[in-house]
Image 1: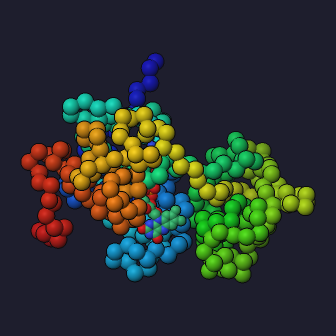
Image 2: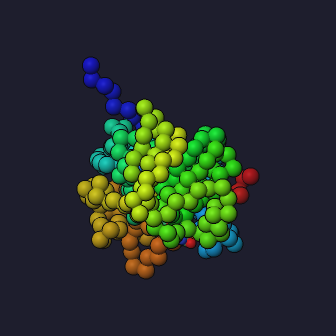
Image 3: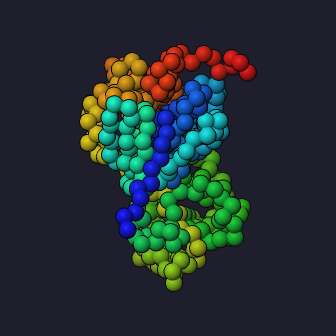
Length: 328
Ligand SMILES: Cc1cc2nc3c(=O)[nH]c(=O)nc-3n(C[C@H](O)[C@H](O)[C@H](O)COP(=O)(O)OP(=O)(O)OC[C@H]3O[C@@H](n4cnc5c(N)ncnc54)[C@H](O)[C@@H]3O)c2cc1C
C-alpha cells in the first residue's frame, strides 16, 4: 500500500518562526489570509529563543527593556489572532511552483501548497549541537529545549552547557525539579550575570571542567556519568538530560531553490520580492543596499512583504492594509 503524502493547504507559508516570521503571521491574519509557519526548531522565536532568551533587548519599538523570552511570548500572543498552523521540528527542503501556487516539501514528507511564501529564515536552519554521549537517547530523556517547565516537577535533571539557555533553564527548573546538576566543560560561563548569580546561590550543583560522558538506563535515561578534567567520574541520577550546547545554522537546503543569493542572503526588491514568482523574503535573510540586521528592521520588512503578498492572494485587495484600529 502506498502511504498518502500529508498535505497542508494555506494562503501564506512562512519559512522560519523567528521574530520576523511570527510578526508576519499576525499580519497575515490581519489581511485575512490563512497562514502556516514551518521551523526546524521545536520552539518558536528563532535566534531569540535559541541564543538569548534571558538577554535584555533595548531596541524594539514600544519596549523600553524586554527579555528575549518575553518578546517571543508577546509575538506568539499577537500572532494567535491569525490562528496560525505551526509545523515545528521540520525543515523546508524543496520548492516547486506553477502559475497559481507553490509547493514546499518538508523533511518529514509533508507537502505544503501555498499561494505565496515568505522566507524569514534568518541565518539558516537552526539545529541543536549534539551531545556526543547522547547519541540514541533522544525521545528517551534527552532534550535540547525546555519549552515548558511543569513536566520536570519532581525529576532529577542534568543540564549540559554554560550559556544563557543552560542557566535560564536551571534557574526556572530549580523550584520544581527534585535536583538540578549543571555540567560545563569550562569554569567560565557565557550567560547573563544575574542569572548565573541566582543559580550559584541556589541548590543547583554546578560541576565545571567536566563533561557528560555516558547516559545510562534500561530504556529511559536513569543516570549520567560525568568525567572531570582530573579524570574523576561522578554519577548523578537523571530522568531528564537537557543539552544546551548551542546551535549550528545551515542554509544549504535553500540554496537549491533557484533564489538569487548574495553570499548568505537572499536578494529582494523594495516590496521584499525575491527573483522567484510568489516568493518573498524578510528579516535577517534578506540583502539590499543599506540592509541592517535587527529585529525592528525585520518587523518592517515582513509587514511590507505580507501586504504585497496579499494582492497576489486576492487581486481585489490593496497593498495598503488600512490601520489596525479601523472598524474596531
Ligand atoms: C546574541 C545575539 C543578540 C542579539 N541581540 C539583538 C538585539 O538586542 N536587538 C536586535 O534587534 N537584534 C538582536 N540580535 C539579532 C536578532 O536576533 C535577529 O536580527 C533576529 O533574530 C532575526 O529574526 P528573523 O526572524 O529574521 O530570523 P531568526 O531569528 O534567525 O529565525 C529564523 C528561523 O528560521 C528557521 N529556519 C531557517 N531555515 C529553515 C528551513 N529551511 N526550514 C525550517 N526552518 C528554517 C530557523 O531555524 C530559525 O528558527 C541578536 C542576535 C544575537 C545572536
